[in-house]
Length: 196
Length: 144
Image (cartoon, rainbow over the protein chains, first blue to last red):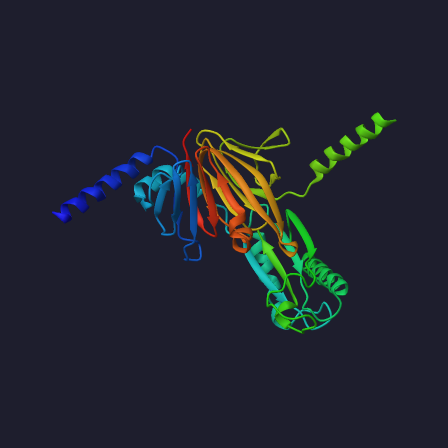
């Protein structure tokens, strides 16, 4: 008996969701890296948290999340999913202490950066310089910019073609590894390249 | 004299607006799609810039893909309209925000660095409810 009731409830749930296939709804997917995040739905009729991939809920918050059939996902979203651009890619380059000299390992990465940029439509690139906390903040601001500019010059010379390029300094304000002031930390002496 | 000052100020404001750094670019288009910025509608093409306040539109049978500076990736199916209401991406200053509005249509959303650093600062509004984005990929459909 209890089993029949739960089967009926399950069927009712599917019917409800099928009904909401014609309305406004959200479906959580796995992240490209395989993890799963969450979305919070806040509507006039309630608030729901969806934290299971392939579950969905009406946007008005009226019903708890429930599984969404693959056929519904394909019907409503195949076009949007097919149009998803190539996901951005990020490179980290590291420096010898105090100057704008790349470590040998990072130097060897540059051809890959240029090759991958060339595969992207209208590629826009950010080159962001960072330092560790050793030295004065204003000098680090300038050093990080010098590093970013040096990398920009270097990879342009090596053949990087871009649709848009931004070269920025975050100085010692955006540490990869949190440290106290006046700390030499090789992993913070870096330039980030974001290919989009 | 004062009138000239006002005129000059307005002119500067307009120029700044037109020159403002784009927050993203169109990466792919099929069919008829447009980007409307500061009231000016332009046919969407690969490389078209997107600014704060831009409205992205796709027509029947069309689709569009856009990548933002913080690595947020959005793509849209046919008959869709999305507005980027707010976009702040200055991680070193702690200024992070991305609010958009899907008036109709369908989208695939892959959140970027803003959602990673400040998950409560990213949302997509719809006519009937708001989606809070907590670092994830999701699909959203809005039926008028």
